Amino acid sequence: MDFNKRRWFFLVLGFALLLLFYLAPQFSPAVDPSGKQFELSRAGQAALGLFLLAGIWWVFEVIPIGVTAIAIGILQPLFAIRPAKEAMKDFMDPTVMFILGSLLVGLTFSKVGLTKRLAYRMLVVVGEDTSKILLGSFVLTALLTHIMAHTAVAATVIPILMTILALYNEGDTSGKPTRFGKALFIGMAYTAGAGSICTLLGGARNPAAVGFFKEFTGKDISFMDFSLHMLPLGWIIVFLVWLLMMVMYKPEKKVIPGLRVKAQKLYQELGPMSREEKFVCVVVVLALALLIMQAAVPSLKTLDRSIPLLLAGLLFFATGILDVQDLEKKVPWNIVLLFSGAMSIGFALWKTGAAQWMAVKWLSLLQGAPWLVFVLGVALLVLIMTNFIMNVAAIAIVLPVALVIAKYLGVNPELILYASVTAAGLPMLLLIGAAPNAMAYESKQFTTGEFFVAGIPGSILVLLSLVLIMFTYWPLVGLTALLK
Image 1 (tube, one colour):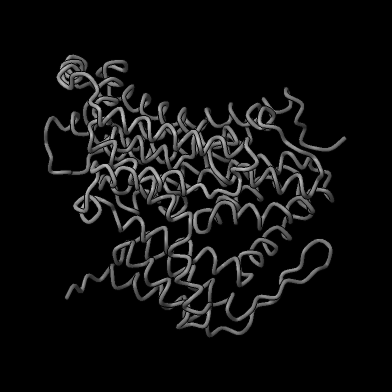
Image 2 (tube, helix red, strand yellow):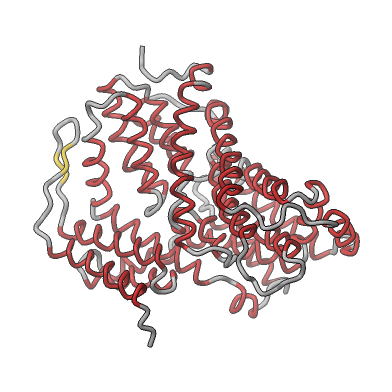
């Protein structure tokens, strides 16, 4: 039995907070600007305690992150938050299945050799300077998220990055963490988020936010309008993430002598693409095309986004490219369970009213604030919430209340929309905030604590980038802070 004092301290602390919220007298209701009261039920109060327990256990890794997810499902019925049937149902939510499908696609890319082919080709282009290798990896990740969901992008690029890391380690297969490895994978997770806010195709939160905005204001935001406002901001954050990684995790080696020649040689040794590689490429392109067409073809909107990637995975098993050994030994079930638990705690906060109570409590404090404080307060709330619950849920909870308060303050509602989307796309503190975060963790190059620490300056840079763009670029394209 392990009696590690630090581990047991945080284990007990998390459980103590759950008990505290469960046994505490009922909290006062939250009141929105119109005077409407939002009561916090006993179940919602306990959900807040479970929310804190999960955060502490995940950040400090007191038990495996997938086991913490299982605890979330167990503790909900034990503390009368939700019945077991509801709590456990979320473990098979379509979003979790989408992540599983993405992992299967990434696994297939790696198995047939496509990731090596892509990695070697990229290294031939960017050369031997490790800072440029990092920048090239981040640019590739961000560009791909302009046309496909960032979860699918992470599944595609992570095997490529693993190949790059192996070349950096010069054949050392021990998997020992390095500063370069930390920068490579933490930076990938952050830049996947930064790239995904640039277009409506980067994640489900973007069209969802636009939909809520239209419902509450009557104004529609086109694909081009969205991209016009968000592209510069997303790319500013991409380059700031690169600088942050170079400061926090400056690579041990400035250059890798002979890497370009070695990469060119290894690429040539792969020879022409095999039939398996071509088949995988065709299947994945068709799956991604189907995902992209969902945004434009009305008849496809009812098709859950998990279906194309799961169908691709099914074809890979049916054709023998993947087998049962891959399913049992190579699929990172720890990560799948992590997101299952994240969905469960997110729905618990949402359905018990705890998330809405938190949002109204926080935003009501900003009613008389200057416009800049109000906008940053909204962004900060979404930034925090989206580290714990689905980003779409964070948008659904915060945006309607924020738009009502913005009307009283005379703040341009579009400013609230774009600030909320930015924050929802960049949860940099916890692995459960976004699928790329958790998938990057599977590289074993960093701990959850290191990810959390890097996310603090990262989140500050996101808010500073938002301030910069609000005072410089957005006014140039007609987005003023206050309504005239």
